[in-house]
Image (cartoon, rainbow, N blue to C red; front, side):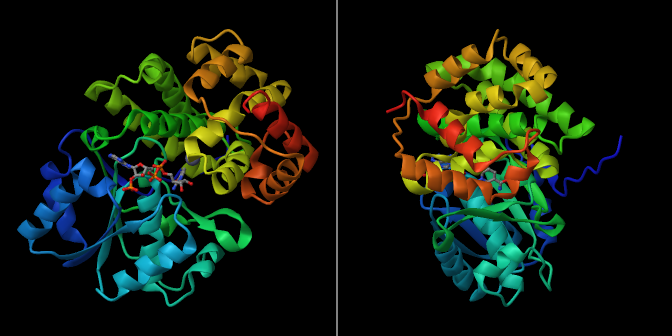
Length: 369
Ligand code: NAP
Ligand code: ZN
């Protein structure tokens, strides 16, 4: 056995964990910028909770609430300029993966005089400002990953950066902040969390410890499937989904993702398909593609989900994701080319070629038009 395991985030999990651990907010300085989306901070209730704590602790704060979904570098730059003018000591990210990833980028840019595109060099002269992450979706696990995934319009895709210094310093993970999530976003983001566990489990970079976390997350997804199908989410289910999402984040912090994520980025960039849904559409053909090289693990995934075959898995995913997608041959060629350039292309148990990915797109989206 030879592996490294590192999650650099202090986790507070459970209902009211923000209010019950106020002192955690007092250790990072007296000026903070809150980075959030247009609605997620407010509708989740997390923004009110954090603002009240800052008043109580006499911490001066500024709210930047203009983070878009799948934030582009231009959006990050605007946020970074606004944040820099406030001279913060730390950053609080509140929201789904988009605001949390943006908070990490703003934290690096606030401490380093660099252009946003230089974030992807992944080496920064000064350490980023500390980030506290408060998720309001149960999907990305960004609260416990070092990654920030940003849209690069100049390259027509999404790219990530992250190193050991970009893990959030603390994460407050409270399922009550996800109760305001509409059912479709709940399903899409749950599929994303499941995808992290699945891809990490089946990655060339999986480790004995990441596998323990992945197996638990996959099992929890199985427990939640019927609720996801019915669109019924009580607090207990929401808490399970959020816990699964955190586990998935811990998994990909060790393993990264695979070509499923790499291929999904183009579906999001060009076709506006939500991130989790994009991954879900590609999963069952991916399982068939790698089966001969990962039979034991794929069979275990099916067993954990109480399914008899990859065909049944495909039917399950198809029922959760009723997306209509139609790609032309030119689009398929371009998307496969872009996916080949992703780091995750090299993490598959089976080496991939552009032709393989074109075939995977065709088979995955067949009958989805
Ligand atoms: P998101 O883009 O952050 O949010 C999706 C939508 O949900 C937004 O409209 C958002 O509103 C809304 N929303 C969020 N929380 C809500 C709540 N509690 N109540 C009502 N509405 C709420 O979605 P996401 O799937 O969580 O994040 C996707 C991003 O994360 C992608 O860019 C993806 O590439 C990235 N990602 C990151 C990692 C990582 O490790 N860092 C891993 C996987 C994916 P607002 O517009 O108001 O925010
Ligand atoms: Zn993801």
